[in-house]
Every structure is written in C-alpha cells, then in structure tokens.
Length: 115
Image (cartoon, rainbow, N blue to C red; front, side, top):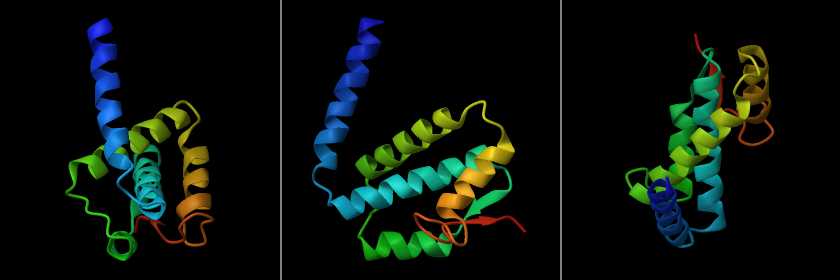
C-alpha cells in the first residue's frame, strides 16, 4: 500500500511541477475540458462540441498531445465523475448543462444534447 501511495504522490508532484509551466487561462481550459468530458460520462444524453473545443485549445495554445495536459484533463474527469457518483443521471445532465450547455455559466456551448 505504501508503494502505491508513494507512486501516486511522485506522479502528482511531477504533474503539479509541469502544470506550473502553464498559464492560469491554459489551466482553466484544461479544467473546463475535463469537467465537460466528465459530463458526457455521467450523462449519456450529452456530447462535446468539437468546434468549441477547437476554439478553446487554439485560442489558449493548449496542446492535447502534451502528456502533462492530458494527465491534468484526465484527473479532472476522474474527480468530477467521482463527485457525481450516485446522484442520478437526470441530475447530472442538468448540472452539466447548467455549466456547459448552450447557455452555460462556465463555457456556453461546450456540451450539447445528442441528436
């Protein structure tokens, strides 16, 4: 167990150290992307708007191929999915839409209802 904790701590220190190389705006993009992706995992009715993602990552120079960026986004996805565990899909859908739906309070249009 100690080895697992040590490995996790080492990984997060490396990620955190690399994360400081990014601007606050880039970190916000990573956080919003992670939360929106989580929204698609907790609500089967939603999908990501690829156009909105393209605008965000281009505007703030967020390279999704960067392993550190990918790790930060995955971490936010896992954190958000865990936070919504057991709360029900309808509630999760409503929450995700409030933040990222067509008139969302965080990033409007990042999520949309599937056709």
